[in-house]
Image 1 (tube, each protein chain N blue to C red):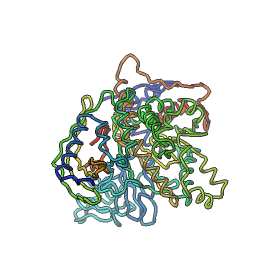
Image 2: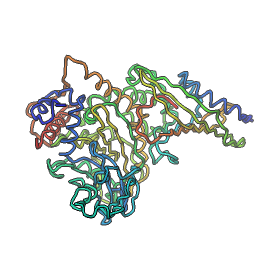
Image 3: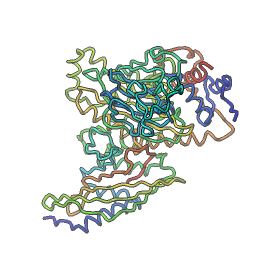
Image 4: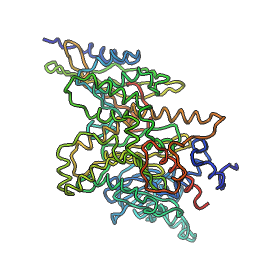
Length: 161
Length: 438
């Protein structure tokens, strides 16, 4: 019998996820995703469909692993020099909890900075985490990141919000 | 300020040699402005697809080169193009990129109104113009139409100047790539669908256009993305079905031989396409039910002929690329000598299974998004070229691969897929349309 996570544990999980990204602990970050988990960054305001409408990202764990492996590669030209990132989160709010189904969701407004060489770019977004519990550990079913300017003409975003 | 190139046909022509081009084509802002005045006025420029303005009063605001234009469906059902400015004070008439304006455009500044044919419908306090020659002036003529408009199977093109060839003469046999994309719908109809991706590039627009038929770069530039995908996929448990995303990424790191033998077809006026015999799109899994729909619509032989055409990238010079087999169009919008907005549009094959659109929008985000690991490495090499070209000592870019002096003047020819003939073809067209009418 799995003990349901407390609200504080859900909040701590979201905060820790951002910290792993900032510290570039990519493998540890990937482990936070359930095997069928997805990372979704819509391209349209209020987008509801990731399948027949394109997105900035809609990636399963295989594609996320490709990104993580690629960041390490020595022929990854767009990462020479490497990018760095920095998250500033509001305290995540627990919006939904269903202890029966072990389904939870949180809502986290954030500012995100990505820098590379002499350039630094600020993005503002809301992250929605759909979380579950697998083998006693909180895991991400879906992390949805809505950029405030999702439909703007953006330059490269190379790391993870 | 007196520039180096304005009005100087000889100086412009001297920038493009048979096998090399001068760096000013990428760096010089005066040349960029001349491109907007000549190249982007004397040629047919893609504006949008008619499905973006399906109903009377629907409009779509965009650019031809750097000129603001507006495409609108009029009351007769025709698609019209106008410069997007009020004849009064120059105010752009639309705020949103698209929408429905009803029966009139209404300027937000002084409420001048215009019918969907561009004519002036009303001006507040009109008595204030009585006794003047207002009625004979430019303002009274309403919205200025784009001089030439052509709707080819739903794809709407405009030509700003009277110089330059007619539509059919300009595109010639290259229109077969649009034909193939449209024919892939069992109803012979496309519609814009699945959202647009907009990716800002700090490089010259021609770098992008050249890269579309550069078959010597994928296995190098995309080793980090496609090569890693192949490696990660190797560790999947035996018997796992190959995901669509792996089918899309893996062919980018095909061998040189694959790209050599796929071939390039070189048309006139800078148009051309890669993937004559096969392409990176050839081996996608079949979509259930689709072939049966195509057979019912066209008969088996014709359906097979349509679907066996797997053209990779078709460049319509100067600034679009279409992928018929996956219904994508990329528009390279010039902003400045060192700045280009890339828009990647997806199309639904009307009447075909949704899975085709699903693959198209997946390809679009995996390859063309500002978050794409393929796009990141392409942009990196463009931006490094934009920076490196400032280096003195060698002012020329080499485009000599598989050059033969006999190629000049040949058209509709198929050659080695790794040839830079098509790139040279684009530069010959560049000179032709930059100097036409000078």
